[in-house]
Image 1 (cartoon, rainbow, N blue to C red):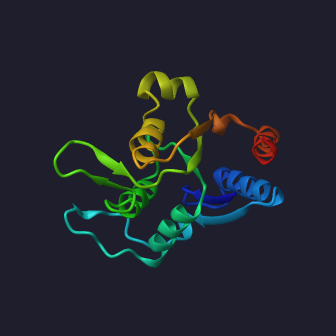
Image 2: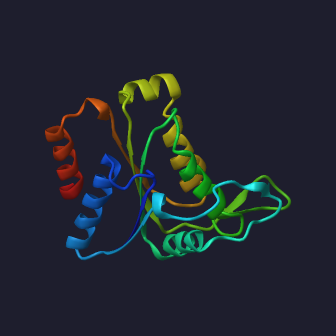
Length: 186
């Protein structure tokens, strides 16, 4: 299986980075082909300056993101919840890379659209300091809805598996290591 891993936390040495390392090793040991991008090492303007009325030229790292998406059968995205949502740089990557004509295309005479990224699945791994129940109760799992429904499934990617790792700031090293091991073996 061709697996594209996007570490959407800007610090590859973070807990999220360790999760990405474990997932990558698991896939490689299973004989899968893996491509990985660490968002903190990528060079691109995350701002969609004119919306989609003027398409900005894609920087090489965003061109590579699009190539990785088209290449993969499974897209793994790992990010922290910040302010009830995804990191801004990750949102910027989605805005810039999942362009009309690449990820989707609206119909001209009705309110529907074509989904261009079908025949792919995704695994979203998200971390938060808040308890998962709080993110559900207070925010309606806003980050997951935005990524799963309004982004990945909007473009045709499904199924989308979600793994929520919560209360991260309260995890000691032994608990973090166990979670990383579970990701590596699960």
